[in-house]
Amino acid sequence: MGEVDEDDYRAGNEVQRSESPGIRFMQRSNINGPIYERIQQVGEGTYGKVYKAKNKITGALVALKRLRLETEREGFPITANREIGLLQSFDHRNIVGLSEMMVERNQVFMVFPYMSHDLSGILQQQEIKISDGEKKNIFRQLLEGINYLHKKRVIHRDIKGSNILISTDGVLKITDFGLARAMKNINPKVESPNYTNRVITLWYRPPEILLGSTDYGREIDIWGIGCLLLELFTRHAVFQGTNEVDQLLKVYDIMGTIKTSEWPDADRLPWFEMLRPNFHTESKFKEKFGGILSTECFDLAASLLRMNPAQRMTAEEALRHPYFQEEPAEASLEFLKHVRGEWHEFEAKRKRKEMRQQQLQQQQHQQQQQQRMSI
Image 1 (cartoon, helix red, strand yellow):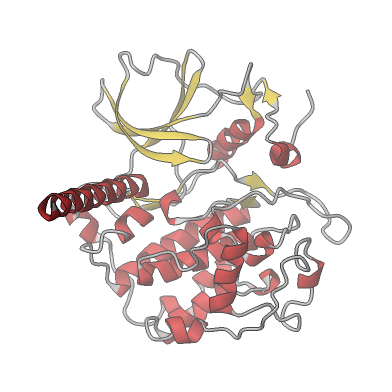
Image 2: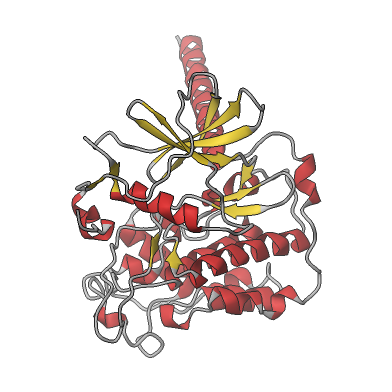
């Protein structure tokens, strides 16, 4: 069977099948049998649920990512095939490593070393204090990881806080390569890569993707990296839209509407005319973030979040930015050894939902009491 590109079929939700050439199953075992014991769900990736589990023989903790194969009658979906192939090709401290594959009946699991936190989970715990030097360390590791991917011509296509794992000894690793792909070997001056537009979690989606671009590259990851730099200081996502149109408006509200003098090719984007705003706004970026970022940090963030993707700083350039030389110096992440509990976005969301339900129940109880008293 010839190679099938997931970008060619994703839009129709049609799943292609593969006999998984080149995929090596390093171990086959019953996951509920003698090897691994699932402890709890800790996440949900692009194509499957993620569980914390323990190796019953060694006692080592692992993360198990169950691949979604419900729509498959045989073999792997090409997306899972690609994710595993990419993971096996990586060798970098700041990229998650695939330990082995596990198969049980019709279920396939990827096995990774377990990491106690993700960036979103940590940032949502306001009691966890992070110094400017520690933020610099986190961001430098993030750039090291994305620079490695980009030098290998790989686009992650889902950069966000929950996909940035952090261990208790302060090592950061980029994870979830379910949407990642190697860049096509084409001459961009002659043909378009025609990638899928259905990528990146909404709040981290750059303006060109929101405007329908299928001709993109590494710069879409850079926008997400810039969002995370701001998030280290604000402790929340900066652009929180409810749908694609609202997301674009959230970007315009802070970054200003598109100026064709600064982004000449913007009017060629598929949805540019359809979504052209009937108003003009100037950037509020400095007004919003100038007071909480140092001069160099502000310049770096602005360079990563250029509206025109062609003007965005690369990861390699960002690593050389003066921000990393200014005071305070980068600090080790010793604070993570003293953090109580394990913090992932999945768990944080669950706890917030429980709190909302408790508050709702309390309100309903109070209303019932007031009604009884008024009778």
